[in-house]
Image 1 (cartoon, protein in one colour):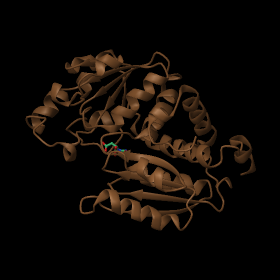
Image 2 (cartoon, rainbow, N blue to C red):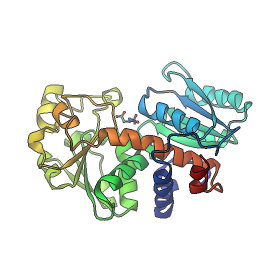
Image 3 (cartoon, helix red, strand yellow):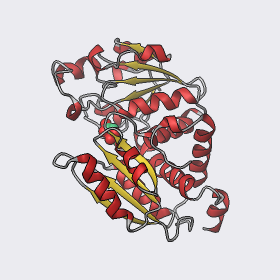
Length: 304
Ligand code: NCD
């Protein structure tokens, strides 16, 4: 694997390998020597807590040096300035560049202008492949397998790179997806790709796992929802809308009381903190795969 820009870069075998590598690395608290002397650069042009912190920690756990650059995208001419930033930082010879950017395609632009391996940590509404991988990892741990699993992805699907990446990834591993939300927040034409949709919130009841999306207010150009109060009433995931024991996930950050009731978020059926934990192992696995594919994971772990 040269870069990880989109789930479309992966086939089922790649996903299996990455999840296996993550499992081998999961829970190892010592530093592994795998990436000693290599530099991992993280460039975040959009806000992030989980993704940026877990990439940085993942790189450190593999003994890489890290350099973290944060910028807000609003005031800069993104195309040119991003190229300039990348060529400047390339002088330090990074082995990998992890980038989050509001503009679709920014990670590809970086990949074309740098010799480093590039990981997309979220580009606009397009893709967030490591989130999809950590979600698959979490589901596999919770359900024992992915083939035939039924996942309802509910809420603001239209603006969600998480939903886009996860739908593709679940499809690759043989799981079934239903996108649930108001008609204004469901993308058009997805049924043609074999994805089921429903505009009835009750449809979540049929799924093994309910994956709740954040209402992406920052990406809404016009009034996609009548009012937040009405959205919460009609689409919010409350204990009453779930079957006992039904598992719930959310990529974070949560708008408590809007798309997800706090009682659900904090219940024993919530996998949300598992997702955060999985983020570290999965991002270690991705860096390992891109930068040290020949180093056997098990041996690396045994050394430590
Ligand atoms: C997501 C993102 O930024 O795409 N969050 C994350 O990476 N944990 C989802 C979101 O912001 O709603």
